[in-house]
Image (cartoon, rainbow, N blue to C red; front, side, top):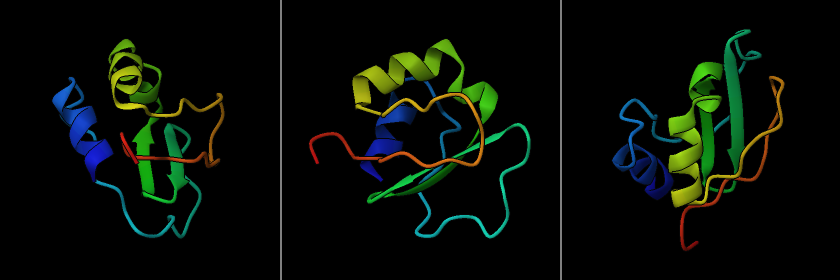
Length: 80
């Protein structure tokens, strides 16, 4: 939850709270699924590819994914 709050505080107002389980279906073609010990996020590809995401991610410690869809990377909250 701290990661989502940080991302929203740094310009991504629509950044979702993490869920506790992965989606039951593959992400849509324009979606990116990221997950790790702090929970899972389903984001639009345009959000992940935006300069605002990079700036907020740098500040909040968000691990940036490689291009593609339906993958997971570790997600950790700042300071945790």
